[in-house]
Image (cartoon, rainbow, N blue to C red; front, side, top):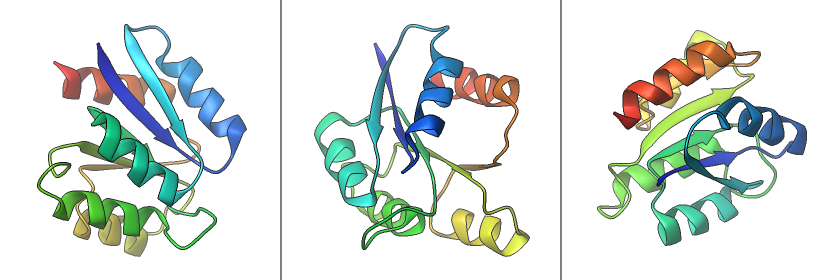
Length: 121
């Protein structure tokens, strides 16, 4: 079974994304902080991480992405930034730290599902 880790500090957003993804045969994991995201990613090695940028604590989404992409054990996890930070600078920074794709909230559930379907093939 394919695994997706949803990382967002807002429970409503995590639930909305989970409902969007619930049409497939997926195991959905949740994290509400950067530290928790790193721990879960290292323990479970999800196929995809949907990663918010702005989170409480020491690590934001940019930090999490950078750490995971530098680690040989997690560097191949497909990371999609899913964030309200829609400025071009933010997108460029996300891609520079290793994000594989970038979606701005509010996002199109159909576009997100299409992207996930393509990645999981």
